[in-house]
Length: 162
Image (tube, rainbow, N blue to C red; front, side, top):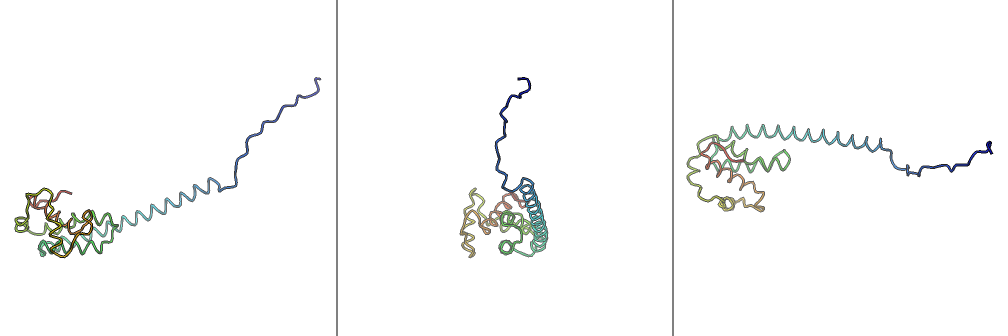
């Protein structure tokens, strides 16, 4: 009996499905997509940054010759042709409007504004009166421009609360 080997059952590992794409292929494709999206996002950021630099310089130039209504018109026109992505354009209205307002003294315009109301609901009526009514009160360029004027006047023409 010494010469006979005991028969041990062979332990086999469970079989796995290997017919799908390899992990290298999946990770490689993901890396390519991430790089392409990163380059596209950087390009979009660069275009937006250049657009705002040109716009702010343009508003600094226009500000001294425009009255308040002219500044609001210029901001609405700028927003309609804004080359940055939409959220940047929407959120850039106060900054662009401020660059126009600082061009000259706006004391007369500030005196005509009702600064007693903290809600500043008059902006919607002003937009309606000038022919640019707000369809969506949460995203209205005209109302944002008037709110910027309101804030500019509340801060003694030194800036706005962003």
